[in-house]
Length: 249
Ligand code: PGA
Image 1: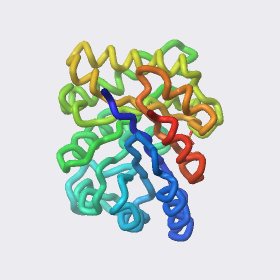
Image 2: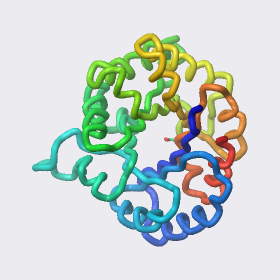
Image 3: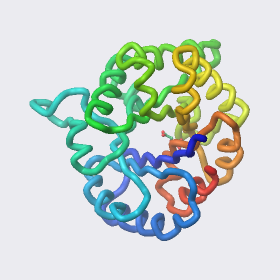
């Protein structure tokens, strides 16, 4: 059985004071949550998050990492540094990194490999834009995004990873994919990976992301191939985020 996983992606939001309140309220209300829960704050807040969450069952991770070993890469953060701060996870290939910073499938595959080499579990984000969906290219786009990683690390790489399906048109827009649409795509992803390794595909957790809220989480997570969510905006409100975590059973 796959244990659902809900990850909060704070993006470039928060301050020490905001994080302190958010974490306190979250931790105090986590009782009874069955899902694995992960918080991905901005890099600079990771030490604070690590300290607050250390004796809880909530885990933490980065939103991005460098594909390089430590060295002369101004502004970057190495996988080893995230691991040194107790991170278990790291998001790779978020659509904002792909579109705003020009990260290619190959660059993302290298980050995925580097994360795993340093003992981090990558949360690989994949998803199509609205234009790609309207042109009927969804499956092709997702296949290319997955194939780049398979080429880099092999299908075995998915044995210790999470995939997040995030249709770009649903991120931060308030437009959620219907549970049926999400299930259809998640099923496609699992089926595609199963052609390479059935057991790996069956065990892989596939999150849905894109305008998930307390009000729609239960229906989305109720679908057989939806194993939790990657939550942006709603992860900045403790009550909303905890309700989403509770919906993943
Ligand atoms: P959203 O973001 O929940 O605000 O749509 C999801 C994400 O970008 O991971």
